Image (tube, rainbow, N blue to C red; front, side, top):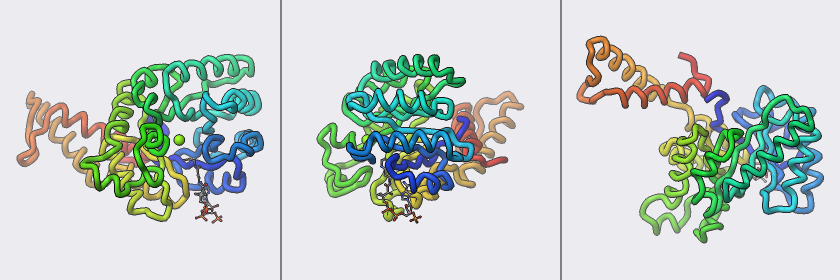
Length: 305
Ligand code: COA
Ligand code: MG
């Protein structure tokens, strides 16, 4: 994992006055949105603002990312053509929403091949896809395998709930329906996405939490995603970034334990033993892999040790 992707801040492409503020924030990734935060009547204007932001603004070392409209909208082809023709050399990541089927990823990949070649773009534009429909979750594995441009799968709780008929008062939040259901109502799609992502070496990113003043609720939702193995979570407001960065960074305690496991394992290995114990806790090669995974996550978050 190279660039961390703990917090991913969404900024409506139709509100250029927010762009600088977003880029000055501590978000690991910032993307300008052309989809659901932009009114139908403002799509063309937003596209022009986004092109200018790609060309002119300082993204402070981050990959430059834009969410385009989905393939079943009338805007998608033009988003791709205008973005890549006008600013392709400065565009690193396209986020494709509402992906239902691997063919959609392939179609975008083929269009990008043409646009990159025609425009003499010197790098390959990467893709992040949102799985947020019944069909997208059903096809998570083939979607994850559909293109070597893919870097992340992103879960979209609001659109998913709407797609399967799950009542949800606000995006990504729990409500009285969660009290009626034993367990997490989003466990199945979130776990399905995670496993599909990992099977193909991709990041798994959770969607946003609507109430940007309810930081305790946000923390709990982020912890649930982190507990499953997710790498990060979308933010819709700058106030959410510190909480999300914290939750997706291993704690000192986690890091200390991981180092202790490594130490104990290697000590046992020198005595030609594969299994040992710390106190009464058995440690073997699987424990080593878990510890290495914690340390890799910490390193990706910029913690040196
Ligand atoms: N990116 C950058 N800056 C943002 C921001 C964002 N996503 N959301 C809010 N801000 C700024 C505000 O402009 C304001 O700046 P100021 O202090 O310089 O005036 C500050 O953060 C505080 O904002 P606040 O007044 O609390 O919120 P708001 O009422 O302006 O906006 C939302 C609330 C929800 C409309 C807004 O946060 C938003 O549009 N978020 C993104 C929505 C989105 O992208 N959805 C699609 C992806 S799920
Ligand atoms: Mg969505």
